[in-house]
Length: 295
Image (tube, rainbow, N blue to C red; front, top):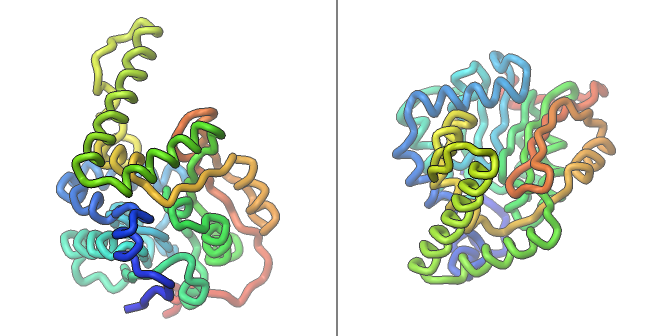
């Protein structure tokens, strides 16, 4: 197994309140995964990338539950997944065990995207995917640089990064720090309070549009968009730490300087959550090839 060259272990960071247990949350999410969720994840990948995945090499950076690795593999890509969180790695392996137990074209590691040597050892890929991960490494710009280098010339990079809301983002950072430094009952209370606040805002917005104001009406739509779970996303949002943000133009400029062209963009305006980007790398000659592309 590839190991992380970290000054402190993942467990130490969690114990000190410096890192959210993403894998623990994903472990509970696995119980909700069904065929509909997988199909919605497939549709999300295909819709944003706008290119067939069959026969392409696919790197899932921060695989989490493993849902999107599974979706990419079912769409015909050769997949390599890795995550820093040991429980996330276990979740990805469990999903592979359930659906594609002996598939040699889906490999899984425990590793960090901040480990430049590890990322280089993988070679380059047709598609590099990292949704909602790089801003929670503690070194977002370094992580962005590493994933960019993992894309083959002419390949695609699909990432999502937390939207910079200025002062609001700084207040969310304080909430996330409080969550990770609090005992479990306080964490649960924080999630419930934030969830109630979001629902209140949604109800008021529907009332202003003269729509049915009943709460929780938007929960089913979340499953339809990416196959995800509103509750598990809410826990992830409240607790997700480390936490960094960027304006869309900052991400655009960063990758434009590295010979990437923006192909597709979904932004939130002033809202909270992730802006989504699909970039295409320039066709400059390179002898880099993904190890998954070799015969």
